[in-house]
Length: 231
Image 1 (cartoon, rainbow, N blue to C red):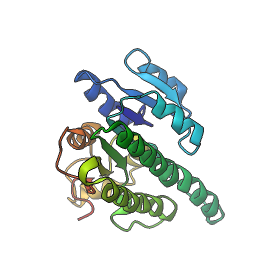
Image 2 (cartoon, helix red, strand yellow; image 1 turned 180 degrees about the vertical axis):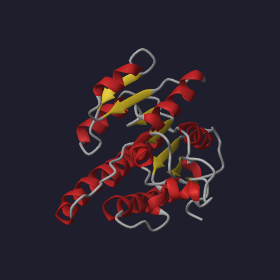
Image 3 (tube, rainbow, N blue to C red; image 1 turned 90 degrees about the vertical axis):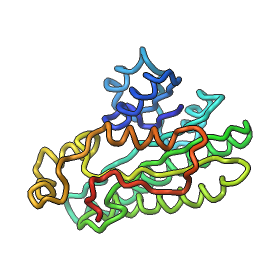
Image 4 (cartoon, rainbow, N blue to C red; image 1 turned 45 degrees about the vertical axis):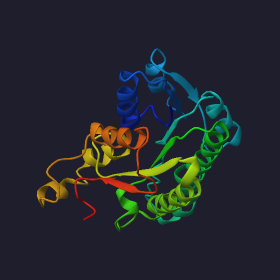
């Protein structure tokens, strides 16, 4: 299993579950080496920029018998000033769309060549499924990722049986949403009774594990793990 960007809060929960089940896990990280090294005794850890073709190739080469790919990599693309929007959108395109989709397509090609009936799971966000103000730089690229993932799923259906699905988390008390939760940004969802709690990393881990199940009969779907926020 390759978990790209898998050393963060959500990725670590998935990795822990897979390792406990005996899976050989390869984790990649972009810049947080200290956090990544916490995994060096339990998994193969590789530094990789998913926007760089040579890094994607090196990451996939570490898993010659690749069955599963999960791509957690992402950037919140937060913008504080109007003048920052363009730079944030360009960064978001590379991190939230281009790198993950290219890696998914390259992984699917390897699976076809190896005749592996594998599973690919990409990560989106609730902001791609509902309209949230000030989320242009982030949400639009994640919405594009969802569409591209479904195209790839259609290309991989049939005899190759490579399943491609997307997990779309809501407000999770792990990963990129942690600072927003700490600031009180999402408290209204609790106060207004929209959700009864914030999500946990384990909620996402269960969803990913479901999509990775061998012979799963689901592909081309987006699963919102958001407690009902996007309703």
